Length: 149
Image 1: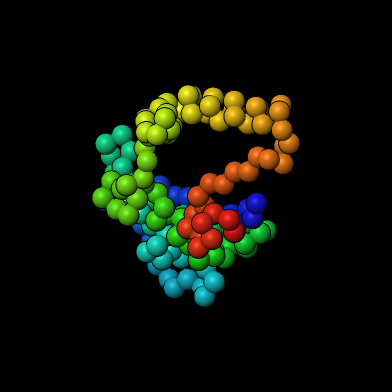
Image 2: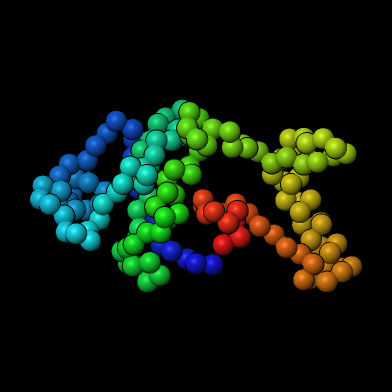
């Protein structure tokens, strides 16, 4: 695990904070220019999402207090907000629930059924084979290595 730290801010869509530190989520005095290495957000670090029928702005920025990345972001980390699901964006075709193969067809299933199936398969391998026979990958946050970085 890399463990780069990021801070996430969420606020109602269409609402903006003020320039004074107590008026914005970042706690910064935005009435004056920020330092070269200060807190900032590129357009890629902000997204609009919908939750329970309401729209929200979401900003994901590097954590200045994190010892791993020290407030800096990688190319992938700087795009974290763009990976959030949006009905009208690039992530609109994302699966919304697990699927399972039965025969040669893919069917919708519940999270309980999917995790139970995974647990049973892993247990069978552990009971009958070698623990090193288990390998897993999940899609990471946008790397070019298909999740194998």
